[in-house]
Image (cartoon, rainbow, N blue to C red; front, top):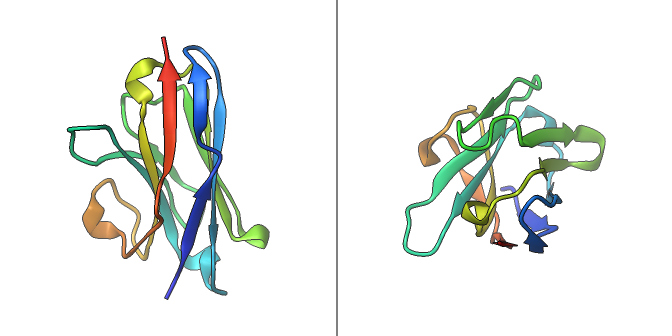
Length: 121
């Protein structure tokens, strides 16, 4: 069982930056693929970024070039650095862990509670 706790969300102006963190419990963190998803009000949850156990990274087209996912296995933590934020990035951001990296919910077995990101125009 893995427990995930996100932090770092908040209110930021358009063009600003935030860094989200997700700390995982357990001793097998380095073996998991980790992903970030987001859900805006009235919309389906969507893929944002993912990182495999061997540090291969994947991004949604909407965030490519602006967001960076990384991991620190010594700290059981995955990060999402978000730059050049836009109002359409406003959503609850969720961290997820799974045995296989991918861009859909199906690849992930464990989910955090989410952290709110609000970008004002």
